[in-house]
Image 1 (cartoon, rainbow over the protein chains, first blue to last red):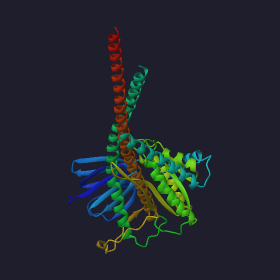
Image 2: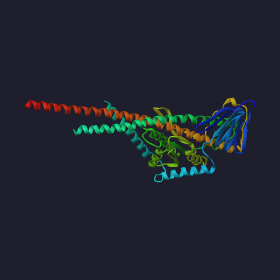
Image 3: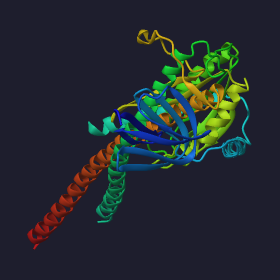
Image 4: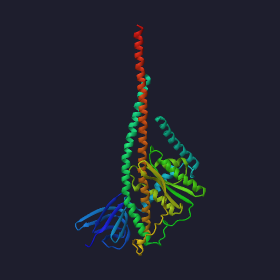
Amino acid sequence: MEGKIKLDIVSAEQELFSKEVEMVYAPAEMGEVGITPKHTPLITKLRPGDVRAQISKDEVETFFVSGGILEVQPNEVTILSDTALRGEDLDEERAMEAERLAQEAMKNSSSDVDTAKAKSELLQAAAQLRLIKKLKSKAKK
Amino acid sequence: MSGSQEIRSQIASIQNTQKITKAMEMVAASKMKKAQDQMTMARPYADKILNVISHLAHAHPEYESDFLSSRDVSKKGYIIVSSDRGLCGGLNNNLFKKVLDQVEIDKSTSINSAFSLIGNKSTSFFQRVGGEVIAKTSQLGDKPKIEQVLGLIKSTIDKFLGKEIDELYVVYNRFINTVSQEPVVQKILPISVMEKNDDYNFYWDYIYEPDAKDVLESLFTRYLESLIYRAIVENLACEQASRMVAMKAASDNASDLISELQLIYNKNRQAAITQEISEIISGAAAL
């Protein structure tokens, strides 16, 4: 093995792995890929599956990714891992749910922002806060 | 002495309230710490994805995408990140005010607005004042997962790609420190192309699998998701910080009230004793 390659596995919520490794195997969408140092720049989507990091000859660490993106530079590999299972259908379902909730919540409201009403409401809230502060400073005296 | 009895029960009830506000203050402090940790943990992903995108911008300057190209604006979209619960000072209201100012300015130039709402507080606010709402989600809890907002993000981005909205902003509170948070309106779509880095003046490109468009689109989507996730976590830290400060103020107020009442109580008691003594003395003198 000549040289090593820097592997970073990150998800939106945390960093999962960051180390020099000899080789990386990842479940790319077009089939599993093995990345060694000095690989050509490559960018591909990942399927759900295992990412194996060959740290040394007899040390392998395995991570499960539920999809994501693999980016390869000659001396570094970045895996942007998803934390949730994705898929057109699943995403679509989630989107519909969010829209349904919105419609439900806004059933009884007009579709145009009543800025005057909103402003007055905010002013009221601010006035309340100010009043509390005033009362407090009075109490101090 | 019914007066002192009343004062005593009042003191006891204020003490109970104070116990609650003190507990809430401490809970908020520890939750704020956790939210801050989450903010730090989310950073590597955002940095990495930004790296990849800037690589792409250099490798593919001629690449045109709906995510990147700006167009004339006739409607703006806002993703509003608010808290689920109250008792956190003016945090949410400051945020709404910031948005409304923008909305009002746009209205005068006949630009419409649509909203996607995260958190109960923004939902109930827009329920009262009206507005076009694209999607909403709430109850993210103390440890928000990106999964919980994917639906909202997708339907909002779809509106952008479908040209129903022409610009997208995320509105949240930026965490400056424990005592100060700043409401911000940050533009996230179209993605602004970052400036060219002169270190990359040779030409190279990635191999794309399966094809460039597919990969780039999912990359941009994830970039937006990471921005919005970051906004949510940061807003959470702000919420807890703001609650901590509010609860500290409440506990202090309670202490003030208690010491005042205690003073009145003591004076009352002293007066009663004095009166009793003078009654006894005058009684003895009369004998």
